[in-house]
Amino acid sequence: FEIGYFSVSVSNDMNASISPSVYDLGVGAIQPADCQTFSFGLLDFDPEDELCLIVSAHENDPILNPETMCCIAEACFPIPACDDECATVEWFDVVCLDDQWYFEAGSLNNSMTTVGYVEFIYPGVNGLISDISSVGAVAHGDLIAFGDLLSPFTNASSPFCIDIVLHEASPLGELVECCSFQYCLDLPSCGPEEIPGCTDASASNFDPEATFDDGSCSYCIAPALINTNSACGSELDEVCGCNGITYINLCYAINMGGVISWTPGACDSADGTEVVESSGETCPTDVNEDGTTNVSDLLMVLGEFGVNCE
Image (cartoon, rainbow, N blue to C red):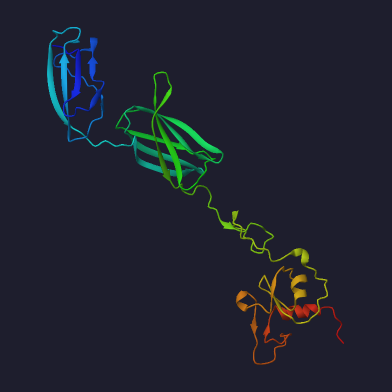
């Protein structure tokens, strides 16, 4: 006989229920030797090794026709493990495209609905950013593949977390949320490589190759202090300027070098001061007779420049 009505119930768990449990096929009755496929939800089932079902098949609704022909069959099936999460991330990759982040991801649909849209929500510099993409119709257990360009106004915090919301589309076109999950990762460097350093050309440690200022600028030379007409004299009282140059006295350091800080005494040669070792003989270029020819000797000569010699 043809089967126009059947019911399904669980035989090995009294607390479990099936939805739907009754199928009234009407004009779509199953003909002898034919086969049709049906699906149902299994609720409150205590996972065991197998699920046992009882199927009661009738020619038509037994409530309307108690004398309808029927048969009963029982069958048991192995039950696979069920993931508690609504989706399992299989991969999540982020790459740079034209100095902008692009991500591709794939996740298994563990929800009990057919997913039609995926929404992405992530932090932006001015608040949350939301975008949504169509993924067709992905059934339970199938892979959802999706990807998108992140906004140029993305707040690239570390770790970067993106909320992924799976939606099913209703017949009226309304979006119905079925589940959501969050995925976090560290975004790769995107765009030209940034070089830290001092970007202020007036600083003593200005770095012309630096692309962003890291706050390391130091200021040693103040051009406004330089006054080459100042009469500093040749008194020897050496100071070491912040620029690593030894001056014969403080007046020279300020007016000739424009330094804004110094320490008493000559600079250590390791700081960059050019030092010429003196030989055992008298060195005519060692004006201050300190045993070496250095900047101090030159400045002493310059200090006497223009003086009439008798």
